[in-house]
Length: 238
Image (cartoon, helix red, strand yellow):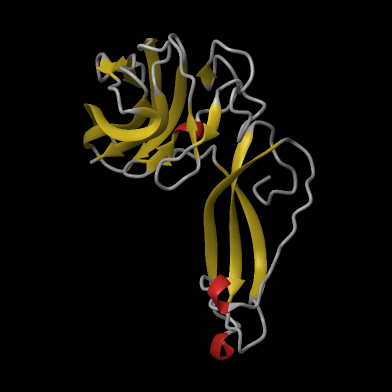
């Protein structure tokens, strides 16, 4: 359930912590701390361990001070499923493609995850990225593969579709579908100077109604080295 006691299979989770401050007797002042770090968990029960420090420099979010001698107070801990749609204006991380397995959340022509990280039980190839902000990217992308996402749009309007991509040599062709309509036409991935040298490209503009929409990034043609390119994130920019 949402409290994380029993976890659903094939789901990413982000951690949220409800913490109080030991500063100036403010033990009843609470805030929720969220971490963008995501973890992949199989269904079942798991053991969680908190590591707490009394160094104020390490606990600025909770407001703890070294003088007080406490790291702070904890009210609750929660794991939040990333099955929730991404929001327009925010980055949709490439590795957070849809759940449900091959043919539902993605199509990948190779067996296994070549990067062997983040979502090792899916066949999409995910690796650690050297792009700003760190995290992961989808790599080794080949012709006929695709990745699906959902996004929540707050209001009607025109939205630019930005992709954070890289390629060593001229990359391949892709297109973007929203609610099964091609909204970009063919998009060429340019030579960025390396598979970990990143550029943001404007892949198209789509007029969207407020609500939840389905996005598919479809990879159509390989580049010079047989790959379409690497993908770090997607963004709908108002």
